Length: 132
Image 1 (tube, helix red, strand yellow):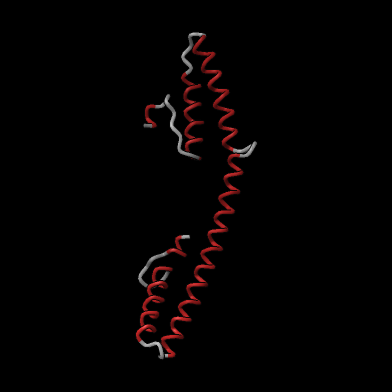
Image 2 (spheres, rainbow, N blue to C red):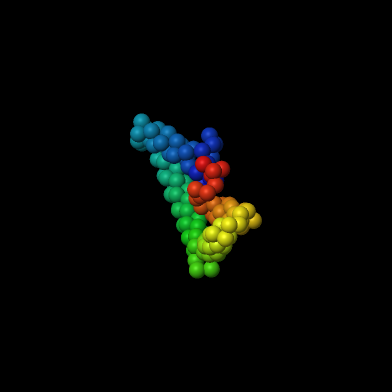
């Protein structure tokens, strides 16, 4: 997408729009000049091609994003796997704590799962002071 929206002084949508407006302004001051009319028509065609290309790129990105989201959040996706593992670890941590043990290894494992999950989406865990 960056390529399509690039705003350098010599290429990209911004440059094309500036050229179109400049040539359109020239046509407005010289409406009988056939060269000015041709320049506006050419600029309009270039803009139309750029918009079509950008639309195609955005559709592709939207499709890819939807597919990635479905893969991550589906029944066997990474989010479900992490959530299941968190539930299991939380149960084990509770049992260990109730038995008077200090479940440091389990807490570390839970932190690792939370780190993995936070890489997929921004989350905050009240058990981790470093998340703030």
